[in-house]
Length: 568
Image 1 (tube, rainbow, N blue to C red):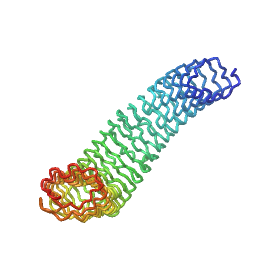
Image 2 (cartoon, rainbow, N blue to C red):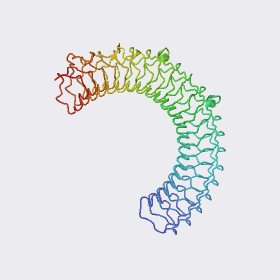
Image 3 (cartoon, rainbow, N blue to C red):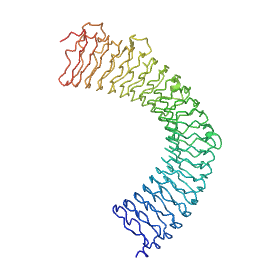
Image 4 (tube, rainbow, N blue to C red):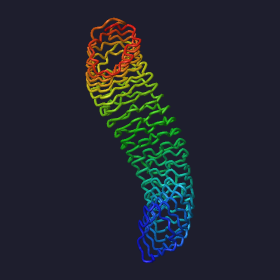
């Protein structure tokens, strides 16, 4: 007899073989069934006659009871206060529950999470006392009307419908006490009105509509004055294009928001002005408009003085070309990939280092203008003294050819691909014209591909200190007009010279084609690869007889098609 038992918590938890008939058990005294059948993966017996009128706690009762499919609609759950995770992971369960009295329940978080078969009506439920609904239907099959629910006491709705097919009208919900709506409709097909919602207490909107291909509803009535996080809010919302400028019109305000990372990433149709937004406290704008193909909205006068990262902010924003020259970037550290594939952008940025603005805090400019096909603006005023990463900065920037002689590169560690496939860059000079680019490269460790395919480049880099550079692969490969004297470079740290001058068609260490040069006195004692170093370098005839190749393991194609080379 179980008549006197009050606690059945964890009774069959983890018992993967249990499937006995316990339908006749007396449960009238039971107050907790927490974890009772958790992980009882074989259990599927009739429990419909159980007296559950005294049960207070049904938390995770059928969590991962993957075989359970029996009807519980007649259970008296009127005393239950906690239903957290009750059917979580019960992947077979899809029985009616609409007759339940849940008026005393305070928490329903994760109740049907990953109950992948569940899709039953629940509109009759009185949820007026529930405070916690986070993850309630996450990754279930739920798509039923809920417009009769009273949710005025709910505090947390994060991930409530995450990755469900839910698409029901709930515009009448009173969500005035909710503080967290992160991922609420992420990955759903939801496209219903929400403009009547009072969201003035919500602090976290992160990923709210992320990866929702369908959503395109007005939200301009929302008061977001408590919001601090809207990161990824409309990320992947490919159809979304609604006005949001009123979010900073009294009594609403965006003034508390600190995180705007990836807000409109992959929002391919979005193109609305945002000039009213107060972004003065925002620290993150990384990937904000990445793949926002149509965006060219007014953001010219934003106060971005607190932003530390704009990594890939406008990457592949194919039409963006706003004048953001007035931005004060005093806190900005990372602009890597900021205009990568922003093929229309060509606005002045030199004033970014005019008081009170400053580029002095920049540390990362990797790929900043990579594939920015139209960008060709002066940057000589920039303070780059703290920049450590300069890889791919102007890679394949089809028109960029500005004088960068003034740049302080003393802190730079990586310069690989910096001018790779930029066919016009020659430090502000015409193609092939010899000029001076005496950067301080004493801290650089990587220069592989720095001028690979830079067919106009012929700057004098004789004075570069390369003593810390380990990788010089394809450094001047295909640099078809490059011909400077590099005899005195200290290459003692170099380990690979693979393809370094391959197809550098006129390179002969600063001399005319075929002229035997003085000894190219490099320290190659650590080099292991000289494969294709002078491949198809038909002008080269330098004296490299002093090279130490004792550690070289690959030398194939070293002088292949180097037709003028004639040294032992």
